[in-house]
Image 1 (cartoon, rainbow, N blue to C red):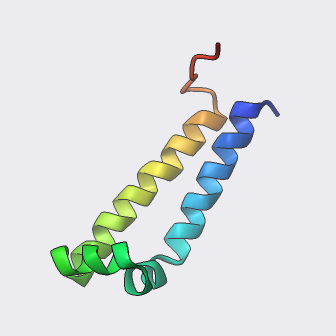
Image 2 (tube, rainbow, N blue to C red):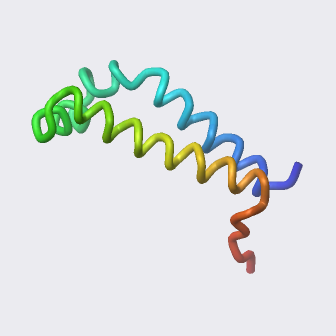
Length: 72
């Protein structure tokens, strides 16, 4: 496993953990409460879920080496 795959795995894992704890993150963090104030709770869950899904997909694409950051 190279460094890129390790980072992608960690990103995908943290995204999965954020999805699992989404209710707590929306209710008990300052930014989560602000998102709920702006959108309402149901829409905030949807927005947060879409953001977390994008993070997980990014991590998986890093692991599969579809995304290859330039190294110097």
